[in-house]
Image (cartoon, rainbow, N blue to C red; front, side, top):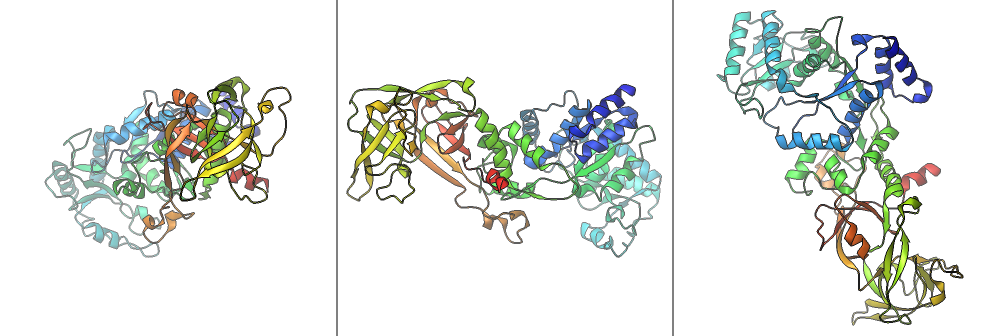
Length: 569
């Protein structure tokens, strides 16, 4: 115990920067509660994919266990077979591992405890603490009253114990229809806490369970199953979000039917992760997927961890974002710009710089030898010289961005225009000498000359010009598809919209460019999940749809950092 207290004292030092949840855990450990043991848990429902809000939760669950030398269980809350699927179980495991956490041999399911939960329910019936109610769900809701008006007791509340036992057993045998009966706890219909007004413990569900088959026809409600499951597997700290604050007394009520002074789980609540221009409701996310408004759970516009991964977000960036927003006791709407700032900072350190032309127009250097090819050295990452460099072929004909040329530019246009000089990155200074247009007046070719003495890196080649353009050689360029993703919703807080939230979807949340040109070195290197910085354009990731013949890139985030700019003001 002395060793535990010494370790805790080190963690609680002011410089440790602990949040309030960690402070509560440290205090419990220092006081020797539950034998000085720490066991947290992450209890997802296997009825959907995890999103970044879930990540905030399990970063706390697993992170606190790591910080204090405890353990963290992964327990699937599989108490509703009508909505659950093994697909979700596997995806949840994958997402947790992706963020760098592991549950070891502590994988559990609420269904593991169905026998113990059923036995506890029978015991409560025998003790006169539970009864079978035959009212409809609407009748039960109505007779519960309001926060200021006491509820009305069910007409079945004082049923004889033997009758309740018989009915509950027959409910589980499947003798009654779904919705015809429930098992309720007999607590207090006049309680100030609405959750204490005889909450439902069990309901009838005849859908076979994906783990237990047809064994059960009654399934426990969350408030009854959750705390007991915590107790059965030795959880000491049940960390959850603020909406469970009013549920805590009921959690403690049920747990104390099992617990004693030697061991009792404790519930602690923190604020949810709410993000601008995003919906976090699992129901709404499922609706987006089922109605084809997005391209699946891993659509890069979705806040799911699969979607963020496909968009190029990294585990370290997500953890950094969660650390920045913190854990508090009040709800907040977090700016998506801060999330973008975290991934931008991460990729700036790690992403290889490459040349990609998204909207190409041909540039012809008239005085460059026709059949000559030079190889220009390009730094892979100026932020990390150890990353080295790669070579790009330079030829007479190049692709440049169409937006980098204007015939009649404004005063502060520092890119290419008639009779103006710019540097081609890592290569030569060129001067525009003219353009060629098609019959509709569209520019199809830009003509220029180059200064042979101005090659980057050569002695005397340090002549200054204001503009620098990226480029790709025409003969060696590889065609690619670029998917530019933007925010899925066009308003800051779509979650509070009173109308149909689908009306708020941003019509420009995805733009696809099919004729982008990429440098040949990049085409040979790519594999799905690799991150790159496209020179002057932003950060992109290789999509799983990519093939050797047809690379596909998803935009992760642009180069402009609105969050960092705002913080400097």
